[in-house]
Picture 1: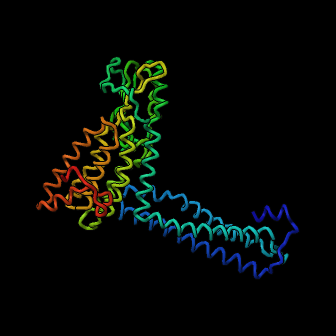
Picture 2: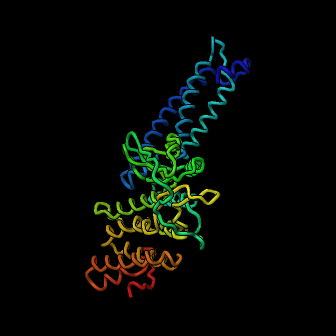
Picture 3: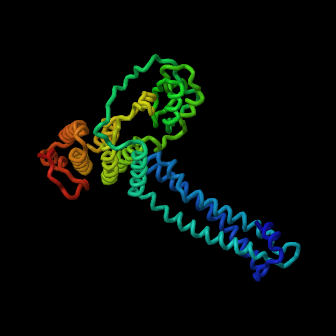
Length: 395
């Protein structure tokens, strides 16, 4: 850039003295190196804190904070430009300070200050409330993208594939990976072009190993294997994309970590249950049986593995119920959660909720000895230990 300025504006110079310009450029360059070190320290702090306090599976998402990388780029750019511009001060003994260079270095310096302020503000994301909201937001986003609202005319078809003989099985070769997403549109197009049925044997979030079957092709042996492999996105880390279970998994991880004897923080578990209830409420209103996909002519082309309503309830509640069985806060909050889900969701969701209410009642009966404690633990309380509500379980 200093060379470009010199070519475009060869006679443009600043009134700043050579000595002052050298001092400014040197100070900016050395200061930017210090700020760059702070960015690395900040990133390390966020990663370590999130891994130790919340869940190791959050490290990837915290490290991808949208402010950290741009801030690092701005600081390095300011440092490099200040060093480069320093070489053009008093070039060939001209006693000139390029005007545009000094303007640009000041602009980069001000931008670096703004980015540093943004970094300090991003420390708020390490608060447990913000982490839970972040995970809940990711979960709500993937639910909207994956599932359709529940329809009264939805058809529950059997999951057994009977459309033609098994023709080909595609297996994974290589190191262990995780299924991150499936290109359903590409799979349906392949099945339509080859007049066959594709049965998926893995789902987003599954780990695959060498020789793990990925899918079966029924009715044709001529589907290009490379296109089938390209329709399955594999990676090293589990992601939120197409996997609403992952958001619930992270929320449960934070809750049971808070319930461990080393931490003993049931309030954090209650806050996690707030987000869990919202996700379950949204899932309960969605059509979850989307495992059999047809083309525009009504021909069955793709069979997917989809979690059921019972699977979501088990993932969201079972471990918290087990590890939080001795906590009044957690039991009261779970009582309110199940009661509200049972009163708000459609009728076909309620048998599973009723079963979980019975499990929770059994847990309370086993964990608490006195009648008074059992009644207290069975009381509905959305805050855990706050405003009580009449409970059918308590009665």
